[in-house]
Length: 313
Image (cartoon, rainbow, N blue to C red; front, side, top):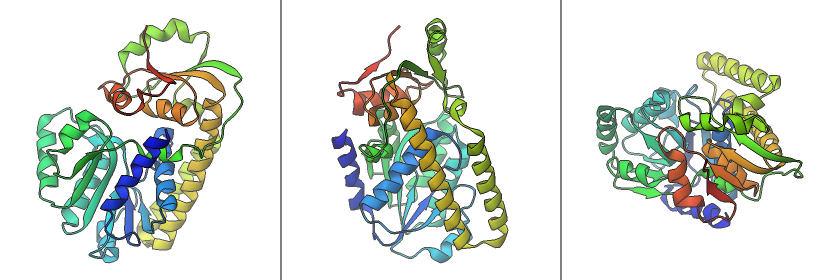
């Protein structure tokens, strides 16, 4: 786990100026997997003394305002995750807008998983990225790496940014046996149905099941601030939005970390259910998502760990 964390330092050599960074597309929703990536990225910036001038989400990235803050030395860094492709067009559209709007700036795509349902959509995206000659793309798995090589000749394999959190998360004493942590969204794998009988005797959750009322209240308040600031266009309010959301994200992730570490074992179809288990040193068996993201990641990065395995019926 420490070697995966140290591997992330390879990203540093691609940053143009460590004092001139814009961070774009941070997740402003309560999917804790994405918040693990966010906290790992924040920790990466802090641990390496990187100066980020602005942190922006899809909801408050204004290209015209951004043009006033960008210098020739600015490195634009895009949040990592599993939303590269045509399943989550809002994020992909923002990345492509940045590529078109800042042709002379270095743009870094932090570790991503890519997936396109439609090959024509992939070809259109390729054309956008190929028109920019300074895009650095990090892939979390071999399949994504193969796709990214068609987008940029500066493509590399890299583990998820959440690994930066290893050794930094709180833990609880073991008090429960098995947690079945299974996704229930568009990436759900039908194989999960085979677990129904086993799950009856154990805890079974997804991220949304573990949210409390205050999580929803904070998210609502932050989005309200963004709607207001879309009219005011204040960089100070943008900074306040990110500061408040990062504090809330840390509280939420720490809560999940304590919960996960209270189990003897995790069975999960969530990639970050698997990664969080690794971060708190809990044995986990991983089930694939709908398009192979989980096992691809496992095969490349976590297979050698003593506490990980592929789930078998």
